[in-house]
Length: 255
Image 1 (tube, rainbow, N blue to C red):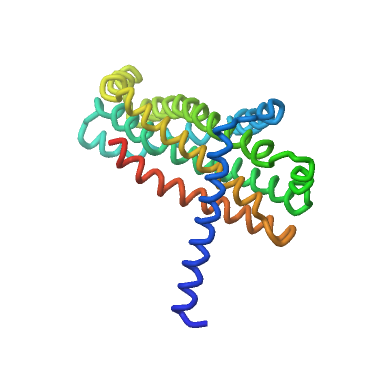
Image 2: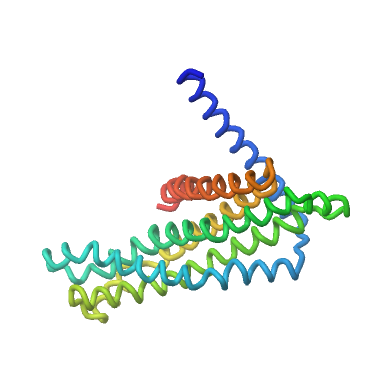
């Protein structure tokens, strides 16, 4: 197969995946018009998605805040611009770093687990058994997961922002000697509520994206157990790429 044929086949494969996920997203959107969430399944997913992800999200956000201050620390000391540390930290973490990092961690942990779980149910014909019992897999399996990921992604972002502030304040004080009061005063004076809401809106969309992509790949597994592994890998990659693409457009729209 020549180079042109390989490139063409690659683009056709990408188009097929995008089309498949678009059709699946349409099914999910249609299901939201007649929401019939299973209560037990929804609460189970809220716990699994949110509570079990809390430690890794908190640690990630804590060090993300610390690293942000480390990166700007040398320039702050050189320019003696201590009063802008809180502003630069809050603006970058709230708008970009927080939602992006938490979204990527979320896709790697929760999204991969969703795809593996639904993929296993698909190849072992459990999903077909649900259809035979007149139970719609979208209503019973997908909607609780998508709802849980949308809600918990936003909630974890709020918690992550708090953890990032703690890491940023501690690092600013320990590394460059910025008093916590100066840091906080700069933070509250220049960082607006709109910056926080900007990041919260992004994280909510990321949660919806990860939920749809991970469930879509899980319910469309082919090829037995090896197919589940391929679907998990494709789900994580597609979610990560989708997060960056969506972030670009949301950043442009929310300016």
